[in-house]
Length: 114
Ligand code: HEC
Image (cartoon, rainbow, N blue to C red):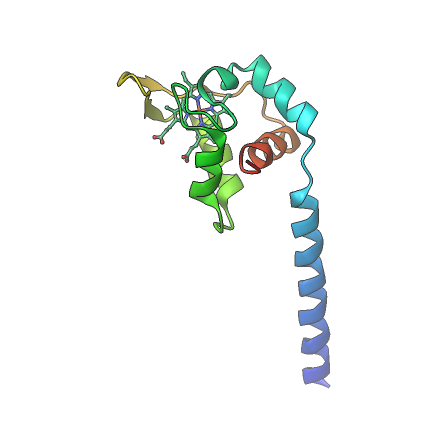
């Protein structure tokens, strides 16, 4: 009885994880682009080209296979860490002007989809 229950529990957990995984995979590219443009992100991050900051494809490679990659990217864009630009200047990283978790999740997903 207890064993049956725990097997059901494991299956339910697994189904839940799959559902979360699928929801995470969806990115609203147009919304992400608009938000990135409005926040000047694209001035420093090309999709495949390094500008003053690393290309999105590099950031994506860095976090490939890291389960909390999106969370780390969100922390980066909301906390304003000190970063080094390609020209050697050290600045506080731009803080994105939204606190909406859905928008943050979406733009992080977009960065990491490259
Ligand atoms: C003035 C240039 C500049 C602007 C504007 C800028 N970034 Fe960055 N960004 C950088 C640099 C430089 C790094 C590299 C930091 C490092 O690796 O130490 C970086 C790194 C990142 C990373 C990777 C963090 C990591 O953990 O490796 C993400 C995600 C990111 N930026 C998102 C954004 C978003 C979103 C915006 C717009 C709100 C933005 N950036 C605007 C320069 C910029």
